[in-house]
Length: 213
Image (cartoon, rainbow, N blue to C red; front, side, top):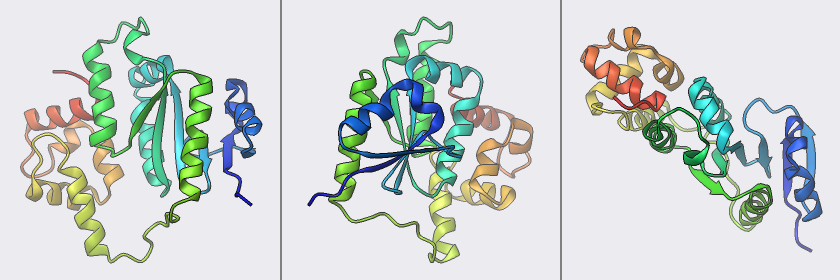
C-alpha cells in the first residue's frame, strides 16, 4: 500500500484553495501556524508559496529576504514556489530589480525557486515533490557534523556574495558570528570587517536586496 503524502499547511493558506486541492488529490493535510514557509512536506521540506504580486511586494517591503532567513534557519530543505510571472505585475519596481532578487534568492541564499502557472499547478507540484520524497532517502539535518566542517560550508556560502573571496568570507563569519547576522548587516556594519570598504559594502547590500546599481 502506498504511503500518503503528508503536508502541513499554514492556516493562512486556506483561502488560497491549495490545501483543498491537495486533500482532493489524496494528501494528508493538517493546519497549524508555521514559523517559516507556508507548507511542510513529509517533515522534510519547507516551502514558501508566493504569487507573482506578493513576490514583488515582499521585495519592495524588504520582507522577502527576512522570509529567506527564516526558511534557512528552519533546518529543513527550503524551496520557493513562485505562482505566476513576477515580470508582468505592472509594479513600478524595475524588471532588473526583480531579476536580481530571483538571482539573490537562488545564489546567495541557496533556495531554489520553482515557477508554477496557477493554484492548480502549485498543488500538483507539491504533490509531485511529496511523492518523490517518499520514494527517496529521508533528509536529516546534520546535527553531529564537526564545527570546523560547518564553518567551511558557511564560508563557501558567503563566497557567493559579490567581491567576497575565501579570506574575506572567513573574516565576515568571524566578525558577525553567524550567517544570519552577516546577511542582515547594514552597510555601516559591513564596513567594520577588514577588507570591506564603502563600495564593496554597497555592492554586497545591493546584491542581497535585489537592487541594481
